[in-house]
Length: 265
Length: 309
Image 1: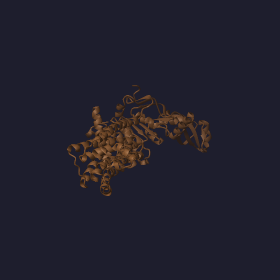
Image 2: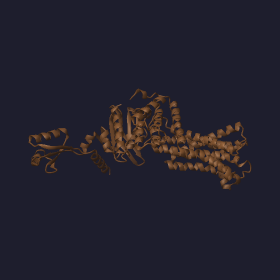
Image 3: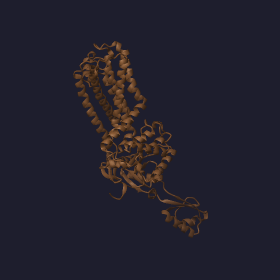
Image 4: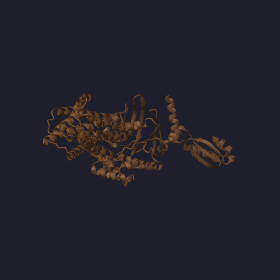
């Protein structure tokens, strides 16, 4: 109708980046407008930390560091996985309410929808982690990590956070509905409980201990804990990378492919 | 490219597992016109719209939108179309304005143009007051209006409207019809699917009826109505002229003063009235009765359903 709306041809890369930025902006707006999400992302981890510090902490003997020093790494990891249901639900919601159909009928980079959700999930997780560490310091957490260890913690956690965000996104994609998406993602919330997050694995029966020692969350927790407390992280760093780099690559690739496939089905 | 049709489909076929949604669909739409795609539930209307709007790949056949091939140039197609699906596809957590600006940016209009276009559309669709409220708080009618506005962000040449007024109250429906009519007068080509025959009758210059995966009828509403049933003239005369009337024009009497005669177009009506005038019969009252699109729909869709079995 008017020449004002004539479309200039941006370069393909500019399209991809611009669309990802635009849809990240959208998902970040969601974070601030969704009360459930805020509670789940920020309030629950705080409550959890206080609960373990003051309610159960007195009764748990770690055989080493103080319980708050021990449990903080576990609560950090839990605060990341607590974000998964919100992410999975947001993705499933988009598919259900038809906005994805609209995006796909537009000359844009479709995968930007997923990237937007991942960016929001990562940001929520980072805020939650900072909150937990900050509150931890207030209630007695005394890290002995130097700058190098802090950077290493940040790097490992960032890998873990991004990977978990993609796993949650994929769950939202394959779930086929909002309720199911929430349900599947809850598994992600509970698996870390059966890890070294809250109590030392040595105290557990053999079968459980084997699971705990070989599941993917334990090395992330062990690495974080060791680095924060200035202990050698040992093999757990490599184990963490061996789990989470492939998880990230595979879920991201599969999610993007799966998202495209819906177009043709 | 052939014919200069803005939408042109030949032999489109689509199956979902063992269910054949489209068997072989041919469709042509001229630029600047409204085609109403009618059909019972499950006839394949939505499948058709999803294929033409690049959301779904057809199993066979070819289609071109504004001269761009759907299979090989989907990006070009996406630049010239707008889509309003059955479900409102706006973001409930964003405000109306944010939705419009976001879509404008995703069409790569540039930030300033996207803002201006959003303001323009909010104004045009009567959403200025609600512009900065989250869409989750909108009424059904407002959401639909926003949905339509969002599909117009890029000033598309072709607009697909998949049951645009389903679930709306009569006032909102009328308002939406008027907005659609404005678009048509501004030159937009529209492909409309609907369950409401009244809607098709009012908006569509041409109607195609989809049933059992094929187009079973295609024409102007008038042509389609004529196809299923004859138009009848009802002539009310003085009671003592009744016998003479029937002797002159045939037909059958409805009561002691009224005769109903099948007519075939305006010429036929003129001839009829002339013959009565020649015979000295005074026509007191005259009415034409056309079959409705409902009759068309029932006749066409029941016929083919039986035929398919």
